[in-house]
Image (cartoon, rainbow, N blue to C red):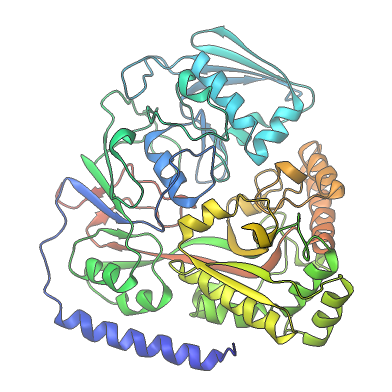
Length: 533
């Protein structure tokens, strides 16, 4: 398959013109009901348990119905949320945490330290940061129903770890629910957050309905990013999966929906300038191609290097993102422009594709022409374009490519397979790491290379893990920067994923919606109002 970048851009502009013409002729319906917020989801949620999957839609669901002990504020600092206060020892080895009084779950039962401790046990056996926590945990003990203590074997920033936004966040569930193994999806959605959800009547593919949790008590402090006061302003929130972008576009133009969480770029262009709509740049993200490290050919570093030599970041972003305002090249394994991101540490391929070098490396890896299975989510415009580009590049060097099309939710279920590609497994899929998490080795779940416990693909490199541990134990920021440089240098050699540049996920909302944070890595819908409510 041959890619023509200019032709792709012309096609996008042509479609945009057609959509704009369509918009003029559409009948404008009455706005969405004042007491209901209607959202177009990024995908179709299939697993409602945020410990079983890191899927975007599952986490958006979880932020509505669960709360955490700590949340990140606008400065990136953890703040108490369900916690009332925390007393930390000077050596950051002991933390005594008290809960706010009067906390209840959505079924009216009290929220106590028994629930918190069991929730943290489940979290720390699954999440990438949680596993680092668990490896250093000496004891987690109940002092009373409102207070518990965490003791670590070495210094560890427990509040920052518990405030992590992506991965498998440390949501607090009832003890009876959190006793489920983290690999078994829960069947009870009793939560600790501002909204509640009836899991017993829900099926995948349906519009999800959330209603106010009558037992939720918000904090008094002003809201700041994910932290502070969380108020369920809308009586109901409806989140719908709309796989056809034309249908979604029409829904935004006619007032059927209030927020479009992940519109494709040609729809973004078509919606710019509409007086009743706002186009936001959205959240920054680090794009990547994720190989499977358990099966050939990408279990061999030379095959991963070959893949890197096929990626021209400018070319792939013109295809997958389009508008240069929404992307940039970046050769740092921690977010460019962040405190620890350093492109100077990168020792791998940069710039235009080198097909001769890529072909030689793939041959040296021992590749014998077996099918390379690429998971292609056709309902996710960015990832779909990235994977078609990669498939085309691999074919140019003689690789046998098997592109298997599916929706994103199916991909999220398929990627858990560790079987060979010929037995229902896979070799490659496209992903992102949200900008906030990509700034720190502590929270960057895709950088973790701890073998069977790593994120899907399961990279396994002792040196990366030693450097992540050294970052956690660093005495000051200068030492952390030094370790972060070494970590990014090692990552560019081992290649836990293949960098494709950085981009922003554009988001669209109605102009009468106030308080919506389009830059949040996981969208949240508390503190949002409609003008006139």
